[in-house]
Length: 431
Ligand code: URA
View 1 (cartoon, rainbow, N blue to C red):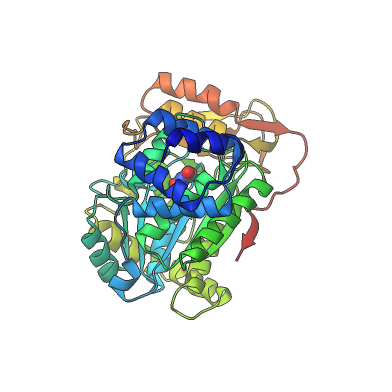
View 2 (tube, rainbow, N blue to C red):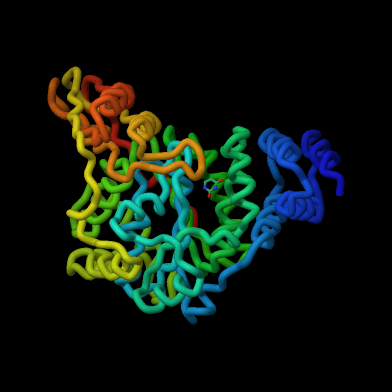
């Protein structure tokens, strides 16, 4: 195999054989193909795309690059999982996991850290004092068996090809290519051993996929990859023009997820938690349809058992589940509306930029994050505000950071005359 020939053929728009793709990925992971050739290949893929057969070969090679976990076989149950393609304010896993587990369905999941403008579940969970995300595979399995839920960081030996390729894509402007995203996400889902997965495909200005057409294409690719691996996949296309919920920033988001588990929280967050949890129950071995799933989900949210499961889960991973123990930022700055009107736009990317300015996210892998800081969007799209009324709250480490974030945050808000046309949160479901 000569990497340069494969790069040239992909650059010219040719389809590579499955063996070519497999060999190239394996050689890259071994270190026999250098980063500069892998980068050239990724850029050729960005322009030319991958065929379904090439995408499958790439996914397969990525799964084969490390160990796999057969969670379902080890638990003797169907195991469900969920994954989001990445958004702003997306704390769904922290609420959906305990809900699903409280309904009696095992939820054992490996999650990722935030990179770029999108947040990561592990960083959010680590804002809980004492919470330990590094579980061995045996611990993950045992805890899922005993408590019904475990969420851990992806172990180093699971899909090492994705770790290496993702880092390279991140610095070569090749993240936003649907086949590469599909292979990256599905290789991790397949290797982690779930029987069924609900994929939340984010669409809009704060997502990798800006259009519904692009998101649908990505969803179809991921479903096809799942099916080939014997996994049931449901894709939910959801709006990411504005952040999900009101809180953006690690501890602030955990608090909001806790509120949703307590029966409160913002309406959009609740809608997705209930919808995705019901879909997961319908994919599980409970033998219920989505409607019955929704009833059961509402029940565990109302009777306190979802919250009790959250408490048990957090304690099992060494954390303190009391939201009063979450870290708080020393400076809270209220951002007020410069004019009266309705919020016409609340740019997810701009809100994320404000949160990054505060230190809530990371630009480079491995950099530390400040768990306490972030933004709470008091007003969201469609809501009315009077001049001088609060639009948002900035939670900052110091006054200077708060002032910088205020400029970024004001750029996120577009206030206009008259109520804007409502936009649905769930845009499409692909079953
Ligand atoms: N999330 C992933 O895990 N991989 C991608 O390529 C994009 C989002």
